[in-house]
Length: 180
Image 1 (cartoon, rainbow, N blue to C red):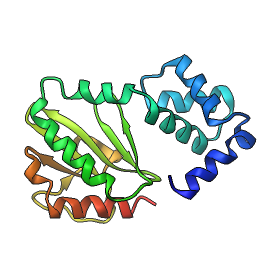
Image 2 (image 1 turned 30 degrees about the vertical axis):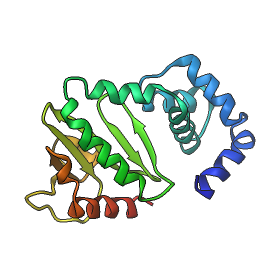
Image 3 (image 1 turned 60 degrees about the horizontal axis):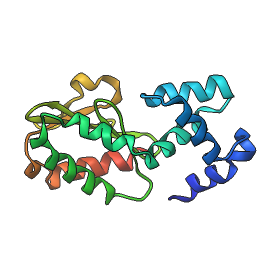
Image 4 (image 1 turned 60 degrees about the vertical axis):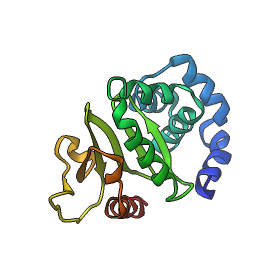
C-alpha cells in the first residue's frame, strides 16, 4: 500500500468520524451494487468528502468476495476471453502497488489516483480495453474511445491473449504514468 493511501486510512477516524473498518460495516449493511451509489451515499448521508468516500468504497470492495463474482458474471458465456483478462490483470499489477482494481457489473476499472484503464468484455469474442492517455494520437490499433465516451480517451479491441504485447503494455504503462 502506498504511503499516501496509508496516511489517508490513518487520518480517517479524525477526518470522517469513523475508522475504515467501521465504514466497511456501514457499506455492507447497504449492499450497493454500483461504486458511485456508495460514494454518493457516504457524501450525502454522512458528509464524507469525495476523496475519502471514494477510497472507503474502493477499499471495501478489495476485501469483499463480490468483485470476483462480478468478474465471473461478466465472462459467463464469454469464457474464451478469460485468458485475455487474466493476462491484462497480471501485467497491470506489475506497474506498481498503488493500483486499485474495481470490478463493476459490466467492466473492471483500474485506478491509480484516477482511472487509467477499463477492461470490458464487449462481445463473446472481444474485450475492449479503454485507456486514458491525453494528447495521444490514434492509430489503426489505438482507436478513439468509442463507446467509452469521456471515461477513456482510447480503445484497443482484443480478441486473443497474444495481443497483450509490448506495444499494448507500453500504452497501459503510459496511461498509468499519466494517472497521478
